[in-house]
Image 1 (cartoon, rainbow, N blue to C red):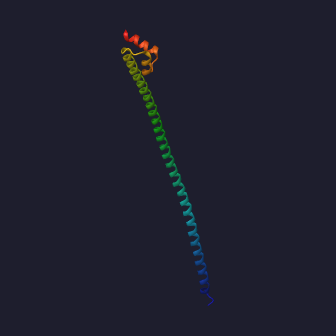
Image 2: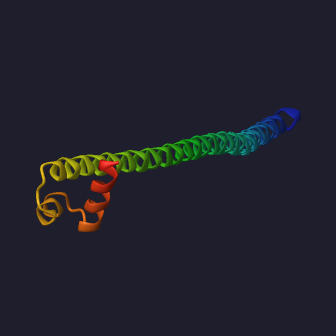
Image 3: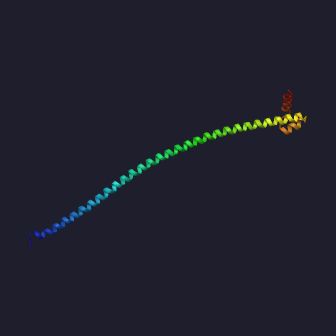
Length: 134
């Protein structure tokens, strides 16, 4: 039994071992390749998400800036309206004060009493009285 059969088993075992080693090496290399591809895909996805988020952030910032400008314009309009209302109230108060002073002049009250009630000076009351008679 020194023929080819006794060498067949060690050769077959060596071939099987090499095949298993090659298969294992192939699995490891495939696994590493899959990991690299997954990492690259992950980086691509993250980059895409970052671009989308940045676009959304810019859009939100633009909307906030537009709203801030709108609020500023509205605030200016409100301030102008308040000034107009204040001016109108002052004018109405002045008119009311003048009417009251003229009524008191017609009632022949002393200048000091009219001045005290209306807050107008004696000269202003005399001027109003002079215009009222004309």
